[in-house]
Amino acid sequence: MIPPTGNISGFVTENISNMDFPDAQGMIDAEIEKLRQRIRVLKRYRNDLSPINRLPREILLLIFQQLIPDLDFDGPLDDDGRHPGFPSNLLNVTYVSQGWRSMALESSGLWSRIVSPPFRFAKEMLARSRDTCLEVDVRGDDAKRFLPCVFGQLSRIRVLAIDRNEREPAFEELDWPAPLLETLSLHRVVLPRRLFAGQCQKLKQVYLRQCVFRWSYDVSTPFRNLITLQLKGCDGRLPNGLPSVLFVLEAMPLLRKLQLDHSCLGMPDDLGIAKFGPPVVMPSLVDLEFVDSAKECVQFLEHFIFPKIQSARFGIHDSYYPTESIRPSDFCDAIRRSFQHRQDEQPYVFIDFDFGRKLRAYTAVPPEAANGSSGDIEPRLQLKIEYWPTFLPDLPRIFHTQYVWAYHSVTRTIQAKKYLGSSLHRFVTCRNVQLPR
Image (tube, helix red, strand yellow):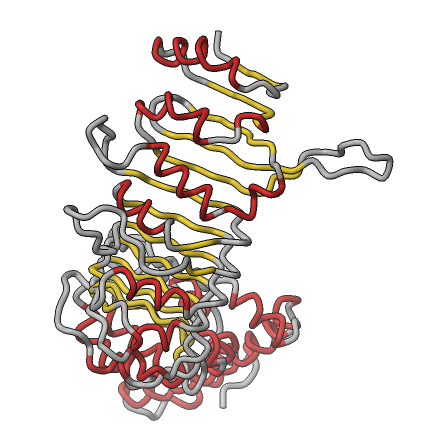
């Protein structure tokens, strides 16, 4: 062993004087490596004394957890073709020190949010997660290769998101039980007839985009506990027409948020507004968004009542012509009937619109104070409508004009000014009018 630094020269001269050069070099290299090892050990002990390394393990793991990106089902892949949820910062942590690396790799919860692409790393994360509940988001071409691995873990998946480049036949594995699944997001996926074999009791949120499914009893079973349902551009097959939709939605008593965006409710163009029995009551729904033709919208609203609605948004994507059977007032009368619980409250109606595209309104009731006077206005129902320019002449019919309290316009169009001049007198209780100069 080499002595202290001051005596190294004498040690080397004494020990290598009778050795061949290769042997002497080998001996010196061996001693150098021993010294390097001692230095590494000393540095490790020194690092262990730093403040950051004296934090409790639980605190460090909480910090590591903050490095994991949130799942964003709509976020695009980055410039390198990687998933936006790829945990690059968490990977960097594993290269800081041996202690941090061991701690991170031993914590299976840090690797439970699995994203793909890249496919190779997704498989490694799946192995590191061991038996922890999973959040999985798979996209693009990697989906076909990686999904067999995912479906083998359905029994422990809490969040599942699949985004395909194109529609293909239904995944047979999607009819396997998923007892822990809470959130499902699918894009360009054909749903099997019996989704998760009906065994997904914890499923609360479903987001379907450009998917194919059937409005049937087989769907109502896995969806019965939903609180959020979003359908965008879906091909919703209707075995029995609109009654199929009524049956499925009626089986969701806990549903609080519903979004239907061009989801093929199947209203034939050559029929009027047909009635299919008494309206279905959605007892928990507070947020509704419906985007489709005026006829589809009226057909839908004619069959539902929303006793707790707080926010409603409608996108009517066809223009109104006087020869059409559905007028703007028909559409809004249907809204009023669906929200009929508001009529008994004699609400004020606040209107804010731009005469070109959108209308916003909300109803409110002034609560009575102890002395009998009215208190502050409390909003009850928020309403947003994309509408036609020819909407304006129907406006007094659409709203309870005797309860309109505020009127706000931000447009300067000639059409708007003409209408304002001829219609404001109908809003006899209006107290607050804001008009552009």
